[in-house]
Every structure is written in C-alpha cells, then in structure tokens.
Image 1 (cartoon, rainbow, N blue to C red):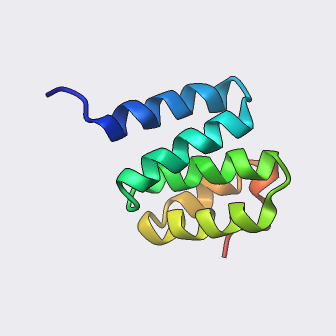
Image 2 (cartoon, helix red, strand yellow):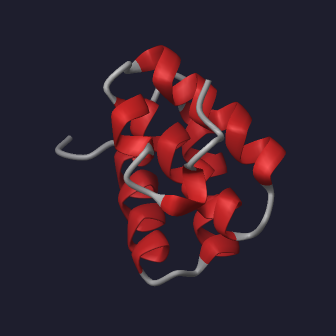
Length: 88
C-alpha cells in the first residue's frame, strides 16, 4: 500500500488550504487528526485554516500541539501574519 487513508486525507486538506477553502480544509484536517493525533503538520495547517476563519482559540490549541510535536514549527508560524501571537 503506497498511501494510507491519513496521507490521502492530509494531502486533500492541503489542497483545500491552498485554495483558501478554509472550512473544508479544517474539516479534512479534523478527519486526518482523528486517524492520527500526532501529525504535527496537520495540527499546524488546521491552525492556519481556523485562524483564517477567525477561530483564534481553536487555532492556538492546534498550533501549541504542532509545536509540541515539532519545535521548528514555532519559527514557521512567525512567517504567517494570521498565526502571529498564537504560538506559546
């Protein structure tokens, strides 16, 4: 098996994020995280989707989890205006 269900869902969510379909992307990342909660990139990107919808509290929780899983994502978060101030 080349791709598992989580990978396909994460890739789909990423495409939706790139298309600025924030709510659809958020829903797809939520499905991916239900399959595996320790996916740092999924937490980071769902935070982007949520922040772009004004869901700052939810975005902050996912960003915190992303950084706990991968410390380098703290610096990455500073590159996005919408995430500034949300990281711990």
